[in-house]
Length: 118
Image (cartoon, rainbow, N blue to C red; front, side):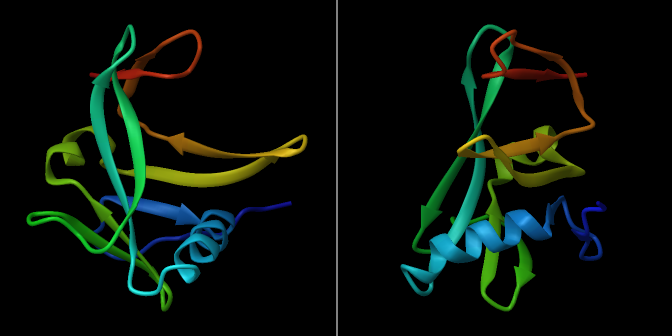
C-alpha cells in the first residue's frame, strides 16, 4: 500500500494524506484555527517537536497550506530543525501516532522523545 504525500512547492514540511485527514478533523472543531509546529529544548538529545492548535499563525511563521481546510504554521525558530520533514499519522494498534520523518536528525533519544540535528 503506497502513501500519497502532499508536496506543495517551496515548503518546509510535507504531510501525508493520513496526516492531512487527521488534522482536518481536529481543526474542523474550531473553524479558522491552524496546526502550529514548533520545537523546544527537551530530553537527552536536544529538541522535541511541539504540535498545537492555534487561533492563527504567530508573526514570522512559515505557512503550509495542506488542503482547502488545513493550514500548518511552522515556527520561524523551528525551521532549521524541521526542513524537509514529512509528517505522517499512523495507527499503531488502537492508538493513532504522529510520526516525523525528518532527514536532518542525526541522533534520537532511546525513548523517541527528543532528537538532535547535524
